[in-house]
Length: 573
View (cartoon, rainbow, N blue to C red):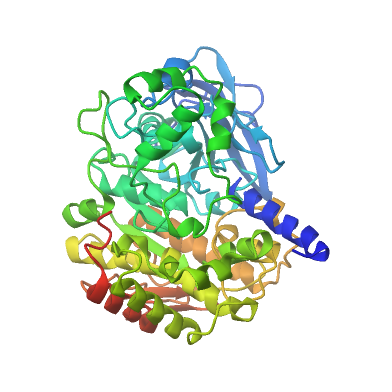
């Protein structure tokens, strides 16, 4: 990498990490300061603050509320334990600790192990309003639910109560030995426990426990999808939104967790017998786990086209505590699918988020794919390297996306489109088709294609290609001033698009339908439900456009044809 490119590359890496790191009266106690309300919830008393969301606009904020006991010591690598009721009045003016993760400063970590906190935001404490529970992304290894990355100002103005939360990350959140000694899915179970806390307590804050929508982006969307597929979440939420991932995307589900658990135990001198080393791992300082978690910038090629080291797994049936994921995602979809209204989609140029990172930190990536064409083959198709099928698949992709030319910098856009399809679009489309075939519950599909002033992460990464990259829809839902390089004019059309996205998401949270009636803001469109063949979606661009087919039909047809011809038990991994 040339010297002149190093500052820009470092800027892109830091930007990437910051994205992942970016009718009833409730029992409100009497108090002298109305801007600091005290709520009497079953969990205990908590005092909030009043925050601004613009001119003549305020909302109540309750931060750092513990929903589970600190998962430390003997509770490490165990299911979350419900938090005991606290005494006194808890100060809700500050966030709790983030979960332990790598810092943007090389060689350092941030956060801590005592991190299972949630935050509540609402404009009204009287009555009951729909609840939206946000599950953040970050590759299961970084980020938090804090307001610096997910400001509530936009959503709360549409008469919903917003909850954001932290869950255990990396090895502490997802280490699994594949047996009863460490069943895994701790971070996923944290989300489930947070939902149980919401069920028991949210009415005290003016939220309706019988109208809860879970929603998330990226890895958070994969967790949302798994919660949709499990029995354990039944009754805890009533609608779900998965943005830019499902449990079928390549990175989302770990198929050989024992390898990574043994690797840590062996490196620490504990051997490979899980019946003894798990207990010893509970005594290790938490910070020692972070170096074993492949940081975003050091994941080997093909990076996010393979499962992340620590993520959700199938749990063993003989685990001593509650088991929530008993089968692989493909089997859960076929047998259960969704029983609540489900909204799924992605941005039109997802891959640019990751190709920008590759271009900044590793100029050898395209050359590695040129040298090893099997890297083009989706691992979830179960096709062996060196086989005729592998050659046919890789050749078809290279011909379709860049006419079989050797990959180099001049083909960056074509390469990005391929990465978008491989990493996200095909697996998400397959998810939609399978769900549509399995259940009559309402299913909505979208492609976010708007490229405007609030595509903040695209601007941070310096992406010049047209389209919306991974995470670009987030600033249209949340207030994220830390990612804003320059102020957005009040007259910008991006603000209209933001208002539309917020309206549709909150409509869905209220009714299970993102366009329940005529609405001038939404251009009076009706978002079509997905048909039994997986067709019907809404294109969210400068305008809203209902389409009676699937996004990117030519490219998706290529993938489905190759899957039908060459794949062996696709997604059965």
